[in-house]
Amino acid sequence: MTVRAYAVERAGGPVRRYEYEPEPLGPLEVDVAVTHCGVCQTDVGAVDDAYGISRFPVVAGHEAVGVIEAVGSAVDGTRLAVGQRVGVGATAGACFACAWCLSGRQHLCAEKDDLVLRGVGGAFATRVRAGDWRYVHPLPDALASEHAAPLLCAGITVFSAVVRYGVRPTDRVAVVGVGGLGHLALQFLAKWGCHVTAISTTAAKEDDARRFGAHEFVVADDLLQGDGGPHADGGLQRGSGSFDFILSTVSADLPWDAYLAALRPHGTLCVVGVPHGALTINPLSLLLGEKRLVGGLVGTPKETRQMLDFAARHDIRPTVEAFPAARLDDALDHVRHGRARYRAVVEF
Image (tube, rainbow, N blue to C red; front, side, top):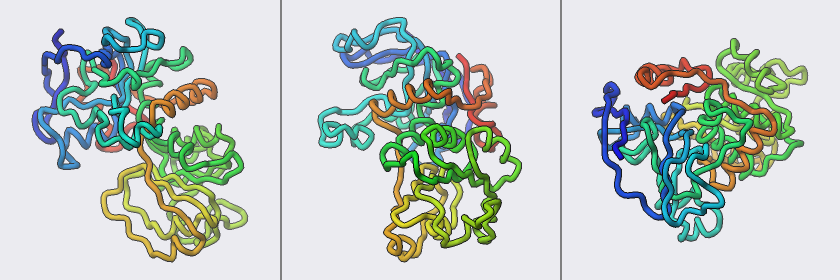
């Protein structure tokens, strides 16, 4: 069954129609006919070879929603069936045999199947194949397909950070960046029960941030200057220890010491955006107050199912801009230049 895909044949090149014949379906594999696919900054990085690891031609796309077309002989038929609406996210399989997989931490598996690293085989296509049925997620009826797609990478990335690092409903938290990741993080944390502050370089995003659930809004320069921003008590002054948890969702190189200083003792600064350069910090920023600087990845199958259920139950939805497949180049360029408000989704 020929797969009709949209490929980029050289770094930064245009999208071209591309066809390939997939291998025979394996016993654990699932083929999904794609109806919607989110466009992530990581997709732009793949087609531009920003990370130096792309294998051309590249068929990107890793936030796929569609309908199951075929299942392998060993797929659990009580969980998945032909015709079912499902999602396939950034990771489409793991070995389920290593120490990480056996302990429920499949996101750390060295053999995991990352769609963005496949070269040909991503979800900007009529069909995408999941390497393991456990990474094919039935979607709650309450989630429309165009809203479910961005949750499969952006949504689970921020949700899993909240779960893994033990954020509590009583915590005071901050989200750095009101963008593709940040606008979802604000919603998840607000519904989690936290007091949420949005930090942005753009004052014009305040209304959106508050609509997404932020209780406070701070322009990043106010944090650096230590004037306290809009907090009456100056709670964002440098060294004041305002937050239990700060989630950085941006790709910018930040003044990390300033953000660590804004944490309370035992606070956590979690980085899920990919900065352009090295993270440079003063060791005392961590040692005094016993603070933590950690990273975050997309979630496990269990976390993804929890996230989808939580989003459906609490009416958490990405704000999306839809593009037909014929305008995939425009969608990639929209994300490349930071114009998406707040996630681009391609309809096939």
